[in-house]
Each structure stands twice: as C-alpha cells, then as structure tokens.
Amino acid sequence: MVEMTRAALVVRGGWEGHQPVRATELFIPFLEGNGYAVRVEETTEVYADAEALAATDLIVQCVTMSQITGDQVAGLRTAVEAGTGFTGWHGGICDSFRASSDYLQLVGGQFATHPGKEPCERVGDERDNFLPYTVNVTDLGRTHPVTAGVDDFDLRTEQYWVLHDDLIDVLATTTHPTQPWHPWHRPITSPAVWTRRWGAGRIVVTTPGHSLDVLENPTVRTIIERGMLWATRTASAS
Image (cartoon, rainbow, N blue to C red):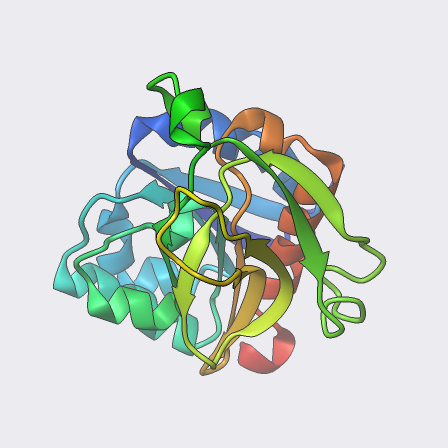
C-alpha cells in the first residue's frame, strides 16, 4: 500500500467541451500511486481557502474559460508564491479566466487561437481545427526533468497559438506555418510546453490535451505526469 505523503488538489470545471471530469480522472490514479492524497473540487472557491491551499503540495487545474473572483485568484497566487505547485494542460490552464490579468500573469501564457483547415475542407465542428503538427523539444527541454529523453513528436489535434512573456522556460515549441487563407506572413513559433518559477512555486503548462485521445498519447501523458511531479512543492519551499 502506497503511503500518502503529499497532498494534491484537482480543480475542474468550466467549458464542458474539454471534458474536465473525464480528463482529470485519467490522472488521479497516477497521483495516488505516487503517494498523493487527492482532493477534488468542482469550482474555484477553494482558492480562497488559505488554510487548504497552504496544506496543498500540488494543484492540478482543468477549468477552461469560466470566471474567477479577485479573492480566489489572490489566494491561488499567494499559495503558488509560497511553494504550492500548479499545473495543467490545454485550455484548462492557459485558456482559463480570460478577464483576470492577475491569473494571466501567474501562468505566463494565454491561448489566442488554433488555426484551422482550409475553408473548403471545414465541416462546421471541432474537426475544423484538427491539424497535423510537430512538437519540437528545445535544447533546454532535452535536459529538463519534465521532457528529458522525449523526442520531437507529431499530433493531429488543436495546435495552440499562445501569447506569452519572457519569464517562462520553454521546453517544447510548435510552429504555425503560413497558409494562403491566413492573414499572417511568416511562420509563428509558440511555446507548447513550459515551466515558470513564481516565488517558491513551480508551474508547468502543457498545451496539447484537447481530447481524451490526446491526453492518452504516451508522450503527452508522460510530459503531463512528469510535470505534476516536478511542480510539486519541494522541501525547500515547505
């Protein structure tokens, strides 16, 4: 029997298109198998509970879009600064709480769009944005614990275009090509996996993860799971 020595908080909700319940359920056995006692919350109200967050070593968030109150985002920022780890994937972390500049600053990158297929190929559903693309591991990523040993890999799903700042450490990127039906004039490279230090806390963002099949991709899943372990509160942050 695994001894539960760490505390993880799974916070899920928001847009149902990302299947927040089923998506997070994929990773709870991994957390429990690595000694985390897991608490699940269906709203962000827990972020305003300073005592609960201070006792949490890792927050796994899957809340796309939605809204967050000022006291909730302040509580989240305070907890991460004090050492609580924060991680998630896709829109559940980098397309959350679009109206909160304090949240966007904490995460360091924000979903802008996911370019689509040629207009004549579109059918009017989410598949219009499923494109083949490559995730390229950076030089830093080849030695970082989250992505060490991971080779460049290909996906066919939403390819996130992310607006970001220079405080993130980019472990992998993806490049959006120019196409005749798009208005930009040169390829755009976006971070696909990044980490961020915030006070004593660690943040990991993985942009692939639109659907369960992507989360079950062995490489994507490995990156997310390693990110959970790396982001977890370290002894020096206790």
